[in-house]
Length: 315
Image (cartoon, rainbow, N blue to C red):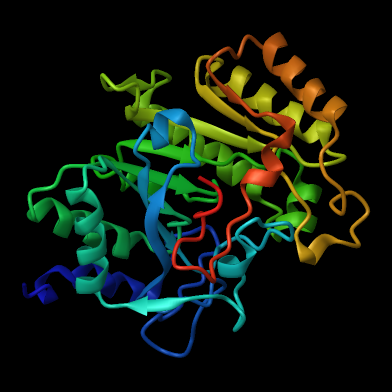
């Protein structure tokens, strides 16, 4: 199959401003932007993942596409092997045909959902993949699994492309966002992006007969050690400025990665009383839709992207 006709959207990467960094980099040249990503299909893994929320993974799992590098540089990132914007990042420049063949093979085995993980800096590539897969007669549920640092106008451009938004909402504290993720404007940027997602999808999570999501929003928030007040502020913003009826995935799975073993707070795991305090705030705000995790969850979400299947020991 000649796929060259599908590549036109890549031309937008000659002056890239898809994410809030607004680098205006020419990703066809050596003049790369903040994410250090070129115009290729930079993907570390395409695999079946069963470790997402029940409404995302279902019983069979989701076909996840893990893009490399990131427009945030979170010092505690649990996918640090592939997210760092340096030469140590595990990355593979796949040809489009290779990408499509891998996805199609998984869909032929009955998987009904495809997730794009960290897609904020690969919007044209994502749209190309969707277009080609649809042209082959597949109609999976498309999941946009993002860190939340997205321009509202970019999210607006995804209306009709994305079925389920799965954004993080990390911070309402600008100083924390600066120190932990190199993004002082994260609170305001993410807030606008979430409001646009809500405009498109509303607060209802529409489920198929097997109880997997077909359309809607699930907001993720990872509770960080020593930062209970930030988590409470995040929840208050969602409940008071968007909707208390949104589905929330409140995560306790934080674990210290090698880059933070000497950090004042991040060098340790999350305490039970910290997580409990955030759950209590969620209940107080009337946020009853979604999921919480067991405190032992940190031991189950430690992928190794040096493996063909990063999560093979996690499922």
